[in-house]
Length: 262
Length: 95
Image (cartoon, rainbow over all chains, first blue to last red; front, side, top):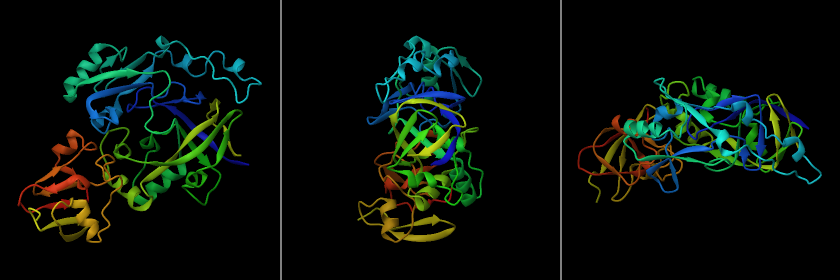
């Protein structure tokens, strides 16, 4: 049964920085290709969450990170060959680590051709007064689960409840979705424990609701905080917005793909 | 005994005078008084109880969700805040 469609597909090359919308993307068991493969680690960070993010420096969410070879990092070269009779499919070969080079542009317009350029971290340390280092992995840095979904109807309803425009990008989801259900703006909450098929291949199990923190209070265009958004969630929606998913069957996902309830 | 026996709390445009016991955080005292103070993790990580300390002094056991900018603005995390002087405390959630 079709229950909705993919509004847009997003990945975040650097954890905590601005994301990029892509037309299609491979989603592995470990998450979306190129999603959050870089992070900035703070020496004085929480031992359980050492990442430097907008929680520590609001303007960090305005940093624009982009792959130098973005087009080559949407689908693995051998993806078609990896769809095989070996169900649920063989995880395909990713490009070499060198292909994942990221350019970073700061809100002030300073561009670093490579996030691993020592000047980037030196300037960020000077700005924040923290001891920092760049960390990278090809398979993603996630706080909780490898995939997140958030509906346009939830963003609209929260905006209505709060009397403000609530930009969907505050929620930093991988998949923004449009549900066919017009009665429940938070329809994704009812899908916890269920499996969705998206497009031709991808299958996700919705594992839990997404508990939120101060990141959603930050305006994605200005980094100004609106604390009442988080307060409203806590008092009216158990502090949650959107859902986390685990990948049951990997595959390509496209903007506009139908979403089916299995 | 706490350094202050009560504190002023602003929430949803309403003013409250809240009693606080020794070792209680401002959030714990507010909840004990039946006030629907916003909170979630109560560990200083999510930032839901971010509020403006308009007067008084507190110490915070942890302030992971408090950025330097928030700190400069006088914001605190109510779940981590305990009075640290006898100055009257005014905590404002309407920020």
